Length: 273
Image (tube, rainbow, N blue to C red):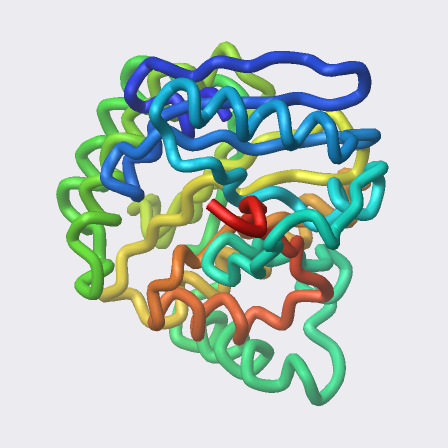
């Protein structure tokens, strides 16, 4: 939340028993005020009170990107609300075991790509490192790589601008959060990096940023395989590759990663505005 949602420095979080309510302006929604829920035991009355607050503040009464499990673990009369699937905010859940093994027909395509990467590069020339702290020199290097590689998403300039700000936020606060970075090199030259954050739920990580030099064929696929292998060896079984934001190319790409599950989300509105 702190890195992705608080770009406008207006994130507010309230605790209600076993749940959290957070409010911010959403950079990807024209900076519209957004409220969502996390946790369990929310009630119909809780939601109605939030809607009343939004009306009082002059906002549209709506809860955005609420994880589906919040509804299932609440005391909520679904018939009282309009609940709509928010496909653009679904998060892709991957197995480290599957992506480290690359076994079976489902992973034949990824297996071929990783195999090709290994064949065209001298094995001794491929190295990688994992860091849980960033030095000033490393941050300078990462910024130079971002400038050199660019933000390759040509489909959505708005998203590129948003991600650029988010990455800078990540690097700024990296050493204060429970994060790590994997960097892959060929002949000591960086070809990719991926930042990820360890979650309170043991065995889970969220992948925040994944950047590669696209002149190096299949660098993304090889790095994903290395990441999964290292995490699996460290006792991490699940990787969250986050949302596709409705960007067609990004959605197709993440679907090809063979997720084992999707973290589904919904929008909640009054039946009658």
